[in-house]
Image (cartoon, rainbow, N blue to C red; front, side):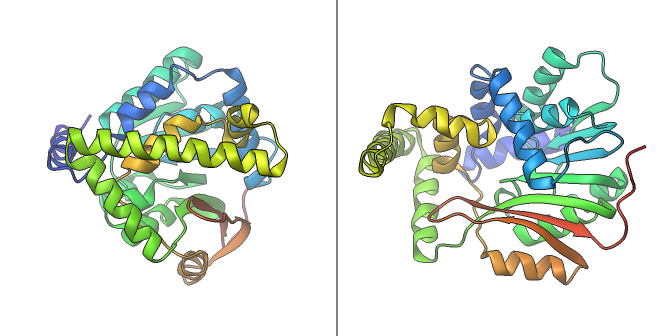
Amino acid sequence: MDSTQSTTHASDVARGDRFEFGKNWTRFLTVLDDERIDEACKSLRRMLGLESLAGRSFLDIGCGSGLFSLAAMRLGADRVLSFDYDPHSVACAGELKRRYFSAADNWIIEQGSALDDEYLERLGAFDVVYSWGVLHHTGEMWHALANAAGPVAPGGRLFIAIYRDQGWLSSFWLGIKKLYNGSAAGRALVLGTFVPYVWVQGFLGDVVRGRNPFTRSKRYKSSRGMSRIHDWVDWLGGLPFEVASAQAIVSFFQQRRFRLENLGLVDGHGCNEFVFSRSGTMPPPS
């Protein structure tokens, strides 16, 4: 683990400039089960258009809890490399490896930054590069997006998710996140105000649509295997925070000779999902 990065991360947190994503993911591990892992696997298969990752390599940029690195292993990836800037996230991924693939020497977990040009260059090429809801939290999103493109092998796929630009509303949420990270009192105020609000909003929305509101958590779980409450905390506290329109992201990668293969758009706040392929031929599974 890089002690310089750990020190910088701690300083950012102390100043209120960075949310401790890794501590939130540590709590998420207490609710992780086989059903959530299966849903994560389904998410990868659906968006990538691949039934298996056998014969392919997988790079997880900003691995967070490590869930999708674990999913890649479950899908048979030949090689998985997971890295995260947050040392607690690195520890989370390490815990999942210990639980499910303790003897695997083809799953490597490191501390690293998506903004570290030299580090990304040293990693080499991967058939699948994955970074869901991460690069907009680096403080230099466009730099991070460019770096994420680098390790994609010719014909390989890049699967990213980026917060949708909502104009003034995105600026409002940035203020909320700064309040959350500014002090313990700000954190309590944000959680005490917005978690009940979001819960009631979702409950009433289900009632209006004729859906059972008490199955809402299970429906959320089936989207990507994630936890609604942990994602709420991630959303409310997530600093740094940047956004982009879907068209801006597509144009950015088209200029770098990537082709859009799959697109998942959201309404309201949340992440648009993109799967791009790099020009060239993706090698068949070995």
